Length: 157
Image 1 (cartoon, rainbow, N blue to C red):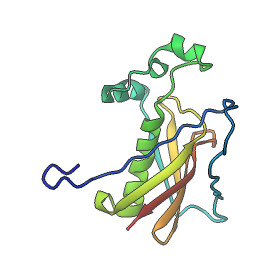
Image 2: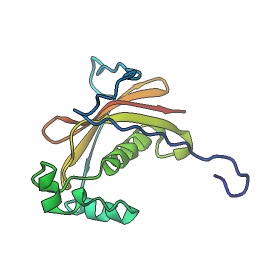
Image 3: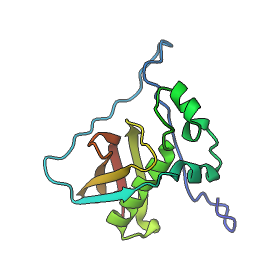
Image 4: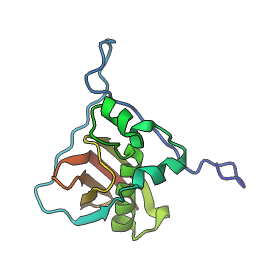
């Protein structure tokens, strides 16, 4: 909220999809369609993450040991701690902000996407962006080409 006016400054929504879980019945919810455009990306940006990136990101208050404790990460099926999904999302948001709005946050309206593959600290992330008017589709790719974030859509003015 804006301290001076009391007006909302941002709205945040999230949902969780846990693969292989379920069985509670009911509607599966809405399905979105997303296809990679049949052309080269309008923007292709690569950002490096640092080997200690997850430890730095923990300073935001996310203390999940999956991102710092090798033994805990091994129990979750990973050979080492993984990067926070929201850190990957933030790197992607930075790329979108600079590519779509020349770094002007007042022009950035929204972004959404699906986390699909974990990222390990130290991996580079390549963000492919296809622009169509004031909407962009995007994917965040790991070095091996697998998407870390898929079905990405961003809006801007």
